[in-house]
Image 1 (spheres, rainbow, N blue to C red):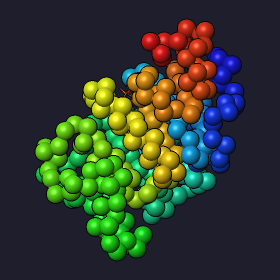
Image 2: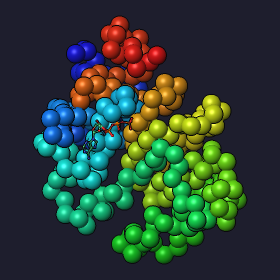
Image 3: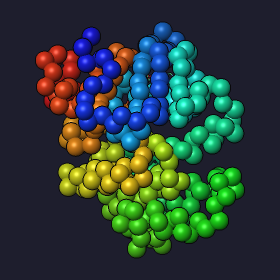
Length: 257
Ligand SMILES: Nc1ncnc2c1ncn2[C@@H]1O[C@H](COP(=O)(O)OP(=O)(O)OP(=O)(O)O)[C@@H](O)[C@H]1O
């Protein structure tokens, strides 16, 4: 195991409080151990990139994190709350603090841009006392520079625009944490760069903490304050892009090819 598995030391790592703390997470399906003693901390205002090859357990980890899957053992704290102790309503409230941008933009094709953005608001308007959804929708669209598309259908938009609308939707409840799953997959390099710039500006404006799951080395280089490499079910190495990408460990180097 690499020496970089120690506590993060980089000066570029934001020094806020941890917003996510996963300790000794274990999850297996039958005999297949997917996560074993997996540990992760993510701090306030941090862009944390998580890399792991296909099937390494990234989605399983995220599902455990948001209460969609029960871990076999281990503890998970999100925004200071132990998620195993939350009832359904409390978990729902916590999920409103987490925005997701999934692989592909996953907009609803039969809904206008406005309706797509109103969708996540529906479940929360009453509890969060949201009166003016129009204002929130417009603000979210302005943040991604696409207010003019409000009455268009997704198929009238380019792939890059759809991804930006999906980002606006992920942001509409002003979440404290955003989880990006392969945000640049399937985009041409120029559009990918635009999305990365947008993610960076969103992180600064909203002061969100972002977990970015990606195989895209360029994306990791630009956006990460810190990275975690998931290998054999564990947090094999963590550090800055610079530290990890110059490692001599062949198993770490393989992530940067
Ligand atoms: N509900 C489930 N039942 C059984 N096995 C599962 C289940 N969910 C995930 N797995 C297995 O766990 C392993 C990790 O899957 P996971 O989806 O977390 O990978 P991943 O790292 O997200 O991959 P990708 O980058 O391709 O999305 C896989 O072998 C998968 O088949």
